[in-house]
Image (tube, rainbow, N blue to C red; front, side, top):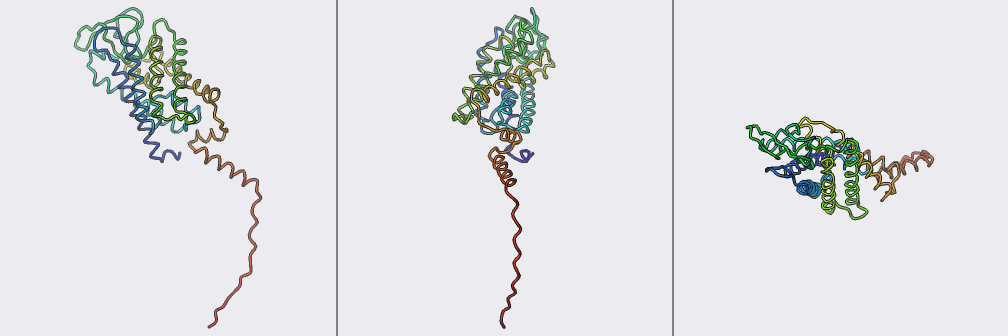
Length: 316
């Protein structure tokens, strides 16, 4: 609970809120389709990758620039983040993503954003978004608030499975995409290899963009539960939404376990890992444990022997 009294803690939480807001706003907003035509998979991937890289560079020294519950969970699994801070980050990320989706909804013309739901699409099968950014698997049409017919101009917000991809398959895809992303994040910020948030920005952004280039065709490439949660709330569409929590979070656990315990293990004791989860400094916790052990091993000191009181008088 000592962290709650620290101004650095609240600055970090604020940074995660602002980062998630900007990530959702910039990533989804840059992928809006303002004219008919097929969506740009490359453009969507670059939008999210560049947004992530920019925020890591900007906020890395404040909070780490997570803006993703999967990254936060991975660092908890690696004993690099306290449980209390992780909870604060999670709440900030969800609220920030909701705010970003709300701002995007408010500033985007109705014909472009549509109803922010796939129910407005007419076509064969269930259509989904390119990285949550429109139709990839068919052509459809919808009507704006003024009744004009718009062909191929669809909302970017919902993240949906391809019609031929089941929930189980989608979960596995999200798991693998997030696992490779988490491996890149942990390797890029590993201080044993001169990992710093600034130098990590580009590889982390490229890893996220790579995941989108592959995953857009399958699931829309969520890879971030907060980014998937906000559009689901705005559109009130939670179809198969659990896939975009289960897949990324399981992928985060897998990536963290592989890196921390198999690929590049850290020589940490259980006491040090527990101290990190509690928000205590590992070195201080180790010194406290050693001091306590030494105090228990040593016999209690004997009380000092009372010396006779010698009265001295001063001559007149």
